Image (cartoon, rainbow, N blue to C red; front, side, top):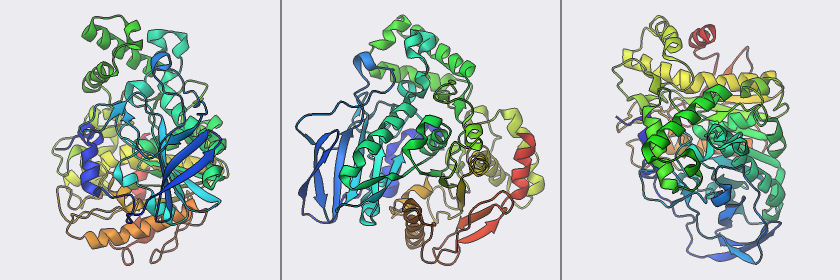
Length: 512
């Protein structure tokens, strides 16, 4: 079985699934020079698309800056090469890609021309501990060909981005569990200041992501100081529940400190200077032994994150903005297996306790008598981790004065381990127009991918999400709960449903 951790940590799964694409079809390459406020960049131009890789948006968070809040990049002198991808954030990966604490860079695909072009900023997933912005599936060439600048950005992961060091190292390190969010906000600030030089429109910035990237998008929606940095949001398999209160965050910090001292025989002050790889090894021990899932999380610190993000969103933090949000029908088949034989355990749940989950799950047979036990298990764990939290974000956003389009992907693989499942991450390749090539019915997946990609592109441009063959996609409201269901084939099975899974949602609302 692919565990949640091995799936999130195995970048090769994404590469194998979606294939490694060359950035452009043509062999003709020309230099692309941009003079931005931060400095001069030399990238590449091919087939009408300019690419700039490894662009720094912050000072390297190393040495005296380790664990500290993000500092804006100092403008550089001279021409900076931007033709090579940067290193991935330091992590415990299962593939061979360069890793480094010096990781705060972004990659940018821009159409030729003066614009102004809308901007799509992608936050990669990986469970807050893994992933990187230059995975082949995030190649933004297709968006650029459609008049959209796409940007993928890195952020600090694991104990570098999601651990509060104040209990271990003192007041100077207060709020460091939110360093990853500060990284993202610093990148978004860089975009506001520099994107016009690339032809981008700083007033039309859409942030989005999948899995952890979608959860970070949801949390950013609940940060008041982040709101001037973007105008629209896209959330694929997200929510905004993945935060600790200060007491829980301090408990994780103490647990990591105790583990570190036991493992290394050193005082916690040594955390400031020890090799990064040793911190990653200690992190893995924490993940393997901590009794709750995802111990490394952002923190409600009372300053950057004032309260639970959905409460801030419901209070109007994203008033007037547009949201596109959704999930896949069998997300959790990847993590608990396509044929789970045991009830859910604490390390399979992201947002609730086993007791609360069981209180809901014991009623699933009554509302889904036609489903097998394993199908009910997958459906319930998917609801706990992805579906219900995503709807909570959508409904909080509506309450706060925003508008939302909601979707569910029910396209299923026709071959392979997850045959018959609309599993976690299946949507990513479709949205980026990089569908699987190895499945039996690759043509249907490619057709649906073109439809989803077109709908996402329309939304990013500020239009209604629409595509040839797709039914009219109505806005979501709490009464009708209109939801676009992406079906097996682009033109014949996508449909709009009203109040899908109403009985299931009522169970969760009653319990939570």
